[in-house]
Image (cartoon, rainbow, N blue to C red; front, top):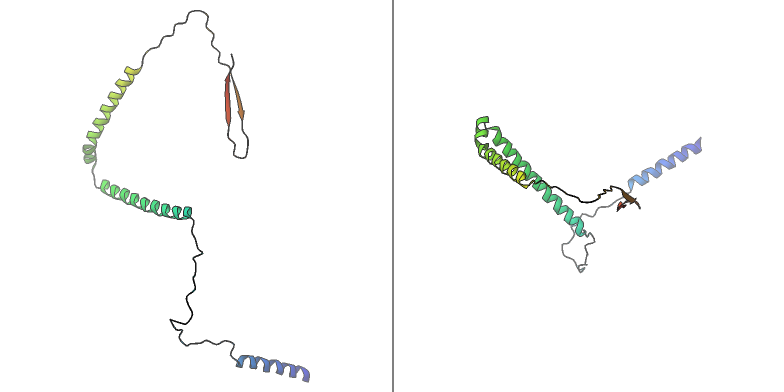
Length: 152
């Protein structure tokens, strides 16, 4: 039993010795701003590729554009919320009239453009609608190549 107490006392003494000695030291003297050592070149190793810079600039531009469009939509919606139905009809009546006029002119021009085509054949006529289609697709990203061959 005496040996256990002696070993325990030795362990306690070792711990107390370790705790009594400082394990770290902080030097609080100020560091001089200018010293004797010449400056050392420090090249920049963080190079950003051009494509990454382009994507970053484009994303900033798209974000700013989206904010601008959102503000414009918000202002337009806020302005339209103050309008009555009669005001909207009065404001849009010239555009409705112009649209009706454009539709009428387009309908007239499409009727003028349509003409009747009559085909007159003399002799024996044969119409063949047989075709042969060959399709090939090769590779991981397939690209279809269709070859249409008319059979007579």
